Amino acid sequence: MVETTGKWQRTSVQHLLIDRRSGKFYGRWKVSGKQIWRALLTDVFSVAKLRLMDAAAEIEKLRVRGTGLAEGSATVGQLIGAYEAGITANSDVKPETIKSKLGAIKRLRRTWPGIDRLEPRQVTRKAVFAWAAKFKAEGTQFQPPGSKTVRRGNSATAVNSTIDALRVVLDLAIESGQIHANPVQPKFNGERLKKRIAKKALVLPDRAQMKLLFNAMETNGSVGGHSREAADLCRFMAYSGARISEAAITRWGDVDRAREQLRLHGTKSETSDRTIPMFPDLSNLLGRIAERQKGAGQDPALGGPRVNPKDLIFSIRECQKTIDGACKRLKIARVTHHDFRHCFATACIECGVDIPTVSRWMGHSDGGALAMKTYGHLRQDHSQAQAQKVRFS
Image 1 (cartoon, helix red, strand yellow):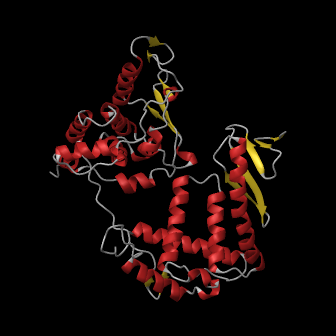
Image 2: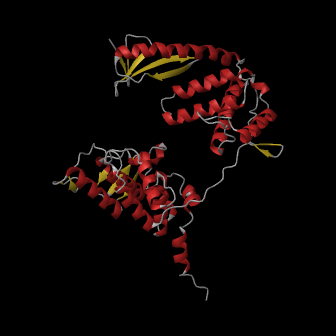
Image 3: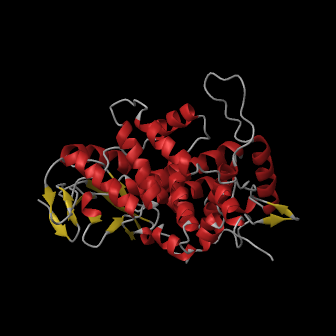
């Protein structure tokens, strides 16, 4: 027997619910007045009950940690536990984001031995800066399996994300009344806390190299016969500005031939969903892919070969190895999936499209500020060509 409550169905087992849309089981508890959810990753009732027991044991540990928070006597370790529980319980957070945040906590504990036992008031600003200075210089002292050397230092991204994690953990101490101010501050005695991120010059293949790269990818001979599809996936990103995660989930139903538009489902933020024009190269590319997939026959609704609107346009989700192989054969600098998005933006700007419009096509919601900062330059070959048009007398 189940009781229906909107999206969820309650089962005969306490704390066990079903998502009516997906049929998947979830566990739900209340800890310190807040709801905690656990995805059980199954639609089989018997399996869900077993996994619920494991999740319940984890929740009980959380209740113990929560006691310290409620009483205002939690250690940093208990605060970290509450932070980790909050991250993993949030179904709106992407799995890769959860992994990244938990990785930052792991680095924090590795580089600050004994921090779990400290009281929040013992984590002073001076102590934070001393820890950060050592972390930036020595890293996590990680030794890869089979290696005789220890890695020194860490990337700016790794260091800064770990500092951010400590700041959020200590915000919990402020909420519980244990400290009045967060010791994780940008500067101390004129010293910068975070590690400076060295901005790399954006080096992209020119138009001639792009054509050579796509051709080389098609003849890579990748396993499974996906060479042509890999090349078309990269063409799609270069002609649409789509992120690899967006390209991978685009379906034929997103192609609107009547209006000559393409819908892209944003994956970075809620505002990144967008509709872009069907640029000539993009239109031709989709026509060729549809012809290859479905063959003869015309669908009036799509204005081209018959395709199932629910089908994904691409059966692969990434192709970095194929790109790497082609770059190696051509002896050009390595190109990534995201570089094709850069190429799209640069090509649009070179063709005279204003940056706010390019920004909208890329799914930015800042009116073009980020695009101006990132793409407010032109490739050197274009810059040199434009320079020939300049006259001062």
